[in-house]
Image: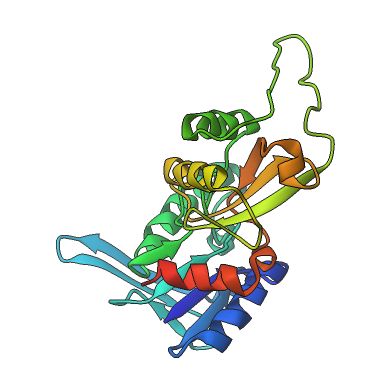
Length: 239
């Protein structure tokens, strides 16, 4: 079973849901952030010695429960904020951070496999600065575009030229040709980033013409760029 968590403006996530549903022999469900944001949505979530219990009651009567199997494709950009309306405005910042932590807990409990799992730096995968991505890429053996920083001057727009985003699922590049050395480096980068789905942005309209030099990455890429190969790679993560 697949559960897709996304929002109405996420065309990529909605496309992935339709393809997973068409290909799957099991049940494929979708829950939108807009549904979770309704004040009528309620959560039951407990963590104890006997394990974790989670049940989300949606306004239309559906329930999302932690089960023994299946996988979650997590495309939520933020935690549901419906509960913020019940507290004083002065405590909104504190409440937002608490709701993020709460969402991290119940999201991770929904299935044995959560792609991309929530972190403190992003609900659907960790967001990093360009400097951090390039540091990880160098560690992984992937060439990068040099980044020059100054405490007195703005950073030059060294990434203002043409670039291309390449999709990696489970550390494997999909939907684009790449030399073996780059593929190996991307596997190491995905492991270092601990993020199952990445959109890797390389310098040059065609990455090979730019020397496969990384600019940055995103944990919320357009899944459509991987086509059916990307969906197959996503399905493999749940096996």
